[in-house]
Image (cartoon, rainbow, N blue to C red):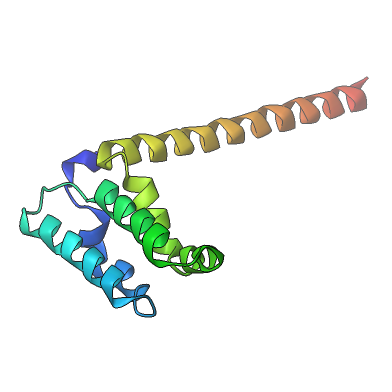
Length: 129
C-alpha cells in the first residue's frame, strides 16, 4: 500500500520546510537545507532524515536561542517540527501510526452506530408496546 510508494514528505513538498525557516537564523536554515539535500542526493528511496533534523533543531534551540525565545521559535517552526516528529521513526512507523488512527476512527464510528441502533430499537419497542 503506502510502502510501495517510496516518497518522503520532503520529496512531496520541498518548500514546506524551508518556507518556515525564512525568519530564522541563517545557520539553522543552512543546516536544515544541507541535511535535506544530502538525503535527496542518496536517491528517491532514501529515508527522510527526520531523526537528524530533530537533533539539529533541538541542538540549535539549546545552543543558539535564549530560553525565553525557544517556545516562540518552536511555534514558528511548528509545521516543520510536526512533520519531523511524525517521521522520526521512519516511513513504516508513520504508516503504522496513520493506519492505527484510521482504525480507531472506524471503531469510534462503529460504536456510535451500535448506540444509535439500540436507541432506535428501544424507541421502536416502546412505540409497539
